[in-house]
Length: 41
Image 1 (cartoon, rainbow, N blue to C red):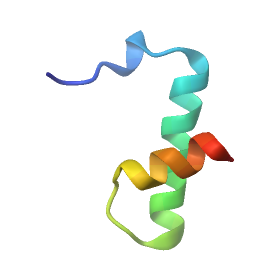
Image 2: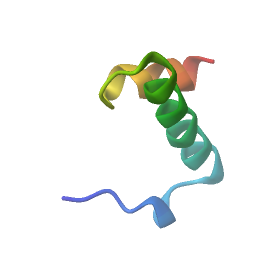
Image 3: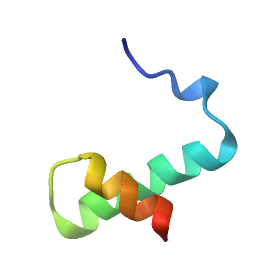
Image 4: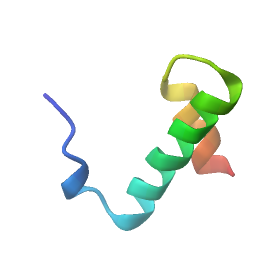
């Protein structure tokens, strides 16, 4: 089942966006570790 970002809370969308920034910063592929790091920050 695909995730629908429009159904996320604002905080969840911010965390996903931040995790995508971390992926670019560390030049990694997107994965759950980046999302977890974004949530912890």
